[in-house]
Image (cartoon, rainbow, N blue to C red; front, side, top):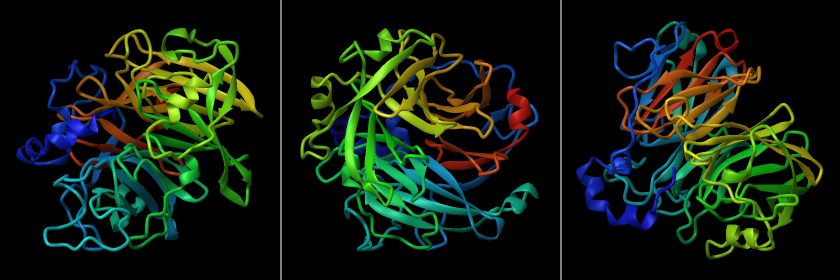
Length: 427
């Protein structure tokens, strides 16, 4: 989510009056739309779903974590890992700034020494879920704890061989980094930034499992798409940061110059100073010919390609989906989908590619936001609608077997597990 941080911090009194955290991001009246007609209304008024699907609430902000800390608000990006004894481990961001009243610390708590910045309220939490209890309709969270804390505005991130990579969408002094978070951590860890991944307003990370190249998105109206190329597999956080450029069209404005389904050749320009004190990485990249994207957010690497969202891309500014197929130091970029109708797709954010190739997309646009599915046939279908929520849906991630989709209702501070016939439904 794009936010003016100075404006945000200057509205501290408004935040307090609104109960802190989520509500204040919707101070301006958002666009609204009717919920999709072909979803089944939820009698509890939380989440309408496609026929054949059900959901369960795993936890809510303000509750207790198993380590004695508080369930933080504004849950955002998330990944699911296989745990011990058949359990599932959710590792989850919380998009909070200093001064938030729904952070992880209970009143009177001394901020632990492991916190990256004692003023930071952003953090990562961990939920251990028993899928058998979930299927039986019983409380399914069997353990929970903080993993890192003291960061700022942890938005999205990505799954990696090193666990969850949590991204700060903030460039206040000392922030703007990516952090590795082990899903096995049963207590708070000291947060260590991956400085080689760059310092900018990070959103998502997606790792190519074959090369360990990291693809990184940036939430700016004049964003770049970056990749980090390790020098050696044994040293994955040493290497070079680069930004995508369109061959024969330097500094291309992708929102207006990308024809649907055309495969454009790409190259990469080197970033000589990936973690400067100022917020200059993208401007220096553009000066060298890097392409301009509008608010890059969700990303996932699957089946040999990177899929990512441009939240306000396209003529209608309702969003675009791109696919990048890498080929050494080049490759191709394809515009998969562009929304011209907010009822079809409104501002795509986090996304996840299913094991069978469909793209599940969380929305952060017109209310009510929901989850859309871009199917293998190229159709856009509604899966879920957060009918009463005043905020985005976030954190879409599948269990390793693809049977459960987890998601966050950010403004409500709720994490849900959705079950149903995903593969058959998408067709």
